[in-house]
Image 1 (cartoon, rainbow, N blue to C red):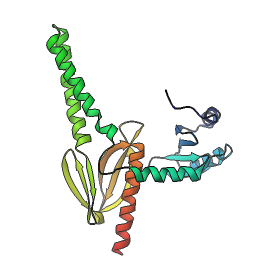
Image 2 (image 1 turned 30 degrees about the horizontal axis):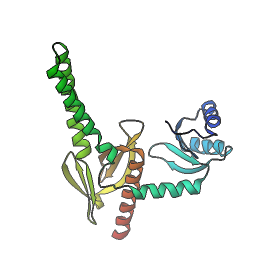
Image 3 (image 1 turned 90 degrees about the vertical axis):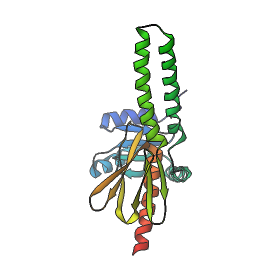
Image 4 (image 1 turned 120 degrees about the horizontal axis):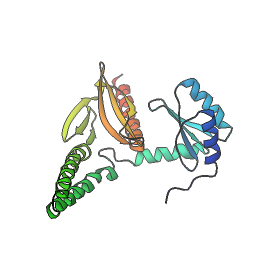
Length: 224
């Protein structure tokens, strides 16, 4: 069963459709919409205030606005959610995916051995494709890790570690992900470089961005 739709959703959706406001997501008392500019964000904030929504966050990285009917509770929930993440590795639900891909590949290989031609050849080709997907995802998901030390940020991608001194990191931004439910996290490096840490589930990406920004601010304060 899907989550129950709040009573206000249909009315607000109809208004947003008429006003040309793109709805990106919603919760029991929250609404996420897309914005293209500061002027547009201000206009949308004014329009949605008529429905009882207050602006909780203007995320310039992703171009979205988070509204809530209960902003204090939403801020507290977001803070608690961010603090609960283990940012040293990816979410469990992501790391499980290669296991199912491996099982599917094994099943397809088994069918290829037990099924007569020409169907067996199709199963074999499909099994090899699934195997390639498994290897890529296993490296991307199992091979990712993160460590923070007083001197540097250590990132493991595809099982290879790299270290970036905090003094070299200028900022952290969210970018597009592999799907609408993901966002990429990218480091802005001195003097003009960038390093993409990966694409993650939306809440994890936000928590990672916020934690890195806190650490960067801390390092900058200590260096003064």
